[in-house]
Amino acid sequence: MTTALLVMAAIMAVIVGWLFKQTVNTQPWLAQSSVEAVQRGASSQTSVAISLWVFLAVVTSMFSLFISAYYMRMSLADWKSLPEPGLLWFNTGVLVLTSAAMQWTLAAAKRGQSARLRNGLLVSGALTFAFLAGQLVVWQQLTELGYFLTSNPANAFFYLLTALHALHLLGGLVVWGRTSIKVWRGVEVKKVQLSVALCTAYWHYLLLVWLILFALLLST
Image 1 (spheres, one colour):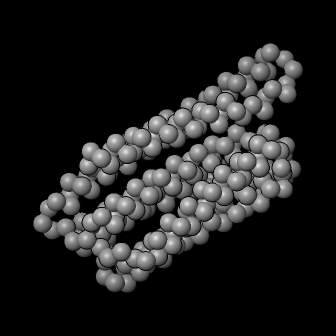
Image 2: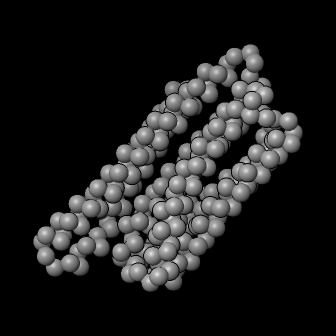
Image 3: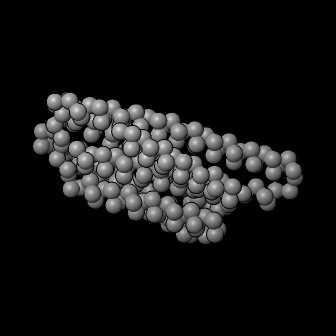
């Protein structure tokens, strides 16, 4: 349990550091002429970055608590581990590709390449939906095998952890969708660069969270 919590804390530190580095390097307001405009832009950028930082801190705390509860509950006699659906490995690979696609999209945004930016957003979004669809198939497979939510504590934790992770991805897709709409409407790349950077940080974070959850589920 202690190891898992330390890993989650390390992930949070890495993501926060990366997030602020991306925010500092993303400065579309520098094209404005007045000092007041610069200050407003810098303040807005900082507020958005801090908001995501606070949100990730809350999410990290929540998952850490669930992981702790998972470890404590599995030590009781009524705990019966679930089988390991092979599709989970495929879904994990899809999520890794999704994170890589988001990083590629961010690189395109930094270079002002609108066509690559559009393609990157499209690919990353499609892969995210593919991952979520794959998770639904896993739940369906387990249900068909008789591993229902209420039949065993291990089942309940599996559905809970995977559902929470999926819900956070769905929340990220809302921001991804708004950014994609702006790009397809022809908004200047520099105006969506921060959104792409924060989406990329969020996707990397959720990939790392999933890898921890996946390792946890496989270890029981």
